[in-house]
Image (cartoon, rainbow, N blue to C red):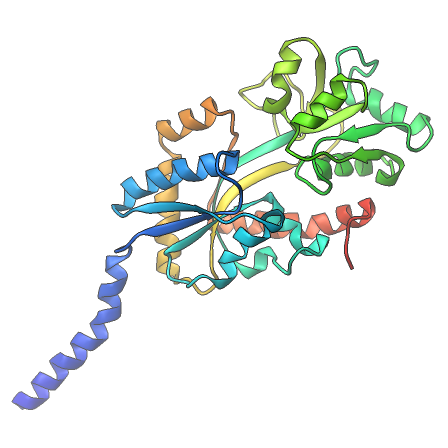
Length: 323
């Protein structure tokens, strides 16, 4: 009987090891992989969140920048990292475009969307002396003039600032191929310079990137591609207010490798929620003019699936889709 009791206790001890291991997570440093360069908006938000997460969890949280391949290199980490909760990938809007552009076979279904914390809508802007006072004026003019007359810019093709303008043109019944897009490198700054110089007619970029020119009286922003007016810029109307049911822009969030245990996903999801609920987080985002959009794992997953499905037609109409 004594031997049986000893054996039973030994078995119980072995069985309890996984439970104990679960209770100890995390017990070593966590890495957040940022697919974009140090100093950029994604890197800055990642480092803020990493510091807050470290305080919340009591372990070091380090940001590692793995750049290249238009974001593919860093995002690919979510496909190869161990599903143990110690590697979190900072995913961005570009995740929804890689497969369609032929860059890499990476789709939202190949990861676990963990948490979204940011969304920045595109904004539609023209020079202040432009005759277009609202979006309808601009769309009517594009329809009335010969194809190729209007020049748009914003950043690279199929970017978070390019694709929203394609959505708008489609909603207005205009073929995207009838409007020329002048891609630029280095974000929206070169496009804004082109606009001020009269070399392009319209720029789509985030409002904070062009706000100083609006304040200076050299640029007029006609609308934002947001669900509702941004409380930081309440004077700028949305496309929806002007009869165009179009939203679009960029976003940032976090993801985990497939097969990451549910209890770890929930644990991290709760930790991120605590961070985004703080005044410190809201102040940081407002100071840096980053929009806040919080989605938990379930809602973030649904959003990514919906966006990915919808972008296929947009890419195809624009001539960007690699089949």
